[in-house]
Length: 493
Length: 102
Image (tube, rainbow over the protein chains, first blue to last red):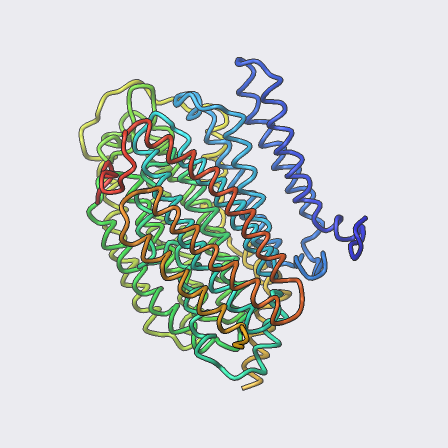
């Protein structure tokens, strides 16, 4: 065993180790099986993810720092890891039929999904700039490949090139900011960084470093004005990948954001809070206004997801335990709403229909009432109509903002939700009113049925009875270093 | 004899970084843009190595090695993606990336 490491270090990253082993297993099984047996790979991947979730559960109330200060295994990491694993499971379930239609190599696809999940898990528990950056890249490189996986498809090619170039560019900016933080403090550990910076004069260089890191993170959460890549990438990528990207990578980027800013830079809160205030307002407004005119469902959901990043940023601005709790709950609820909507879009893809234009939904209700009703529910939930899950999430976010004194932010958030109803309801109008477009019949594979059921159940149950989720999130936040640091920063002033 | 201090390295890395950023903004060839991004990452490495020297510990150098490794991984994936794009489009000019517009 290497010096400085103990068996405990490996014990606490058991879920990650299991996931790594499982990802390699998927690759090996892919080589060993024949073409006809390939559909089984999807179930194997789901199995790997379920086993990972099981090994994660014992760590729900852990609060330790392992691997010489590289990783924090705490409630915050636990909650986010649950989000990632749930997202990955639902994504894999909805992928199987899509993979067959697009004739993708199943082994590679599932392996990359698992790699991306692994990266996200390290982003959530990393409390060192190096760990966070490695986690981020493990995720991002997997996503670059996943986006471009439809090799003969020009939209997929173009999306991959754009995502890769802008992703690498934003990585450069983020890393430059991180290197300056290291230069100013002499440490890459976020908690040590907070202690060192607390005693320092606030220099111009520190502010420059902060702006660079905000910019780099802004790209990853697709906040306006760093959102230009998102619509194109979401439109061009394979639909299940878009779903995974819009939920998983966004949640992971928010985990990274909270770690860096609330754990590492709590003493600069009065500098970055206004920045995120502006970003939140611009992101919500531009995202919603741009979504109004879209005719492509994936593109519309891309702008909608930009707008949702704006809502979630409200939790960051509030920078209180209430705000972070609300943020985490919202991201969890967003998993169900967004993945459910994407599952319906994935079903529309058939041999003869691409199925990502709004008009492809026309008359859906008359032929497939169940799918249409599910889509209706997801749209209302994304729009935030009570008593859906989306309403509960927004309610907590806005009340956290008001509690921290950001009343205008809450008002702008509510106004934006009202605007967003227009384009969500437009989808419903297409499904119920327009004449139907004929194509080969829509079929739902058993895996797809499970995916839709999970999404619908989550969105319905947590909309009506959110208490367990709320309690879990509150418990998770209690041990989060960022909240402790924020409280200390206030008492220090 | 002028002594080379960390601030000299910071000026060098800031210059490299700006050249990289400007390259990304103004160039139209995907490969050149990619090279400009590599320049930005190397500016980060210069910074990290200099700070590592300044603080007299190895953390920064380890960080730099990770950055180099990740840049290599990104280059492999990125060139693959660019090649797939070229096979369909027969161009590496970003002005001709116009399948998707808003």
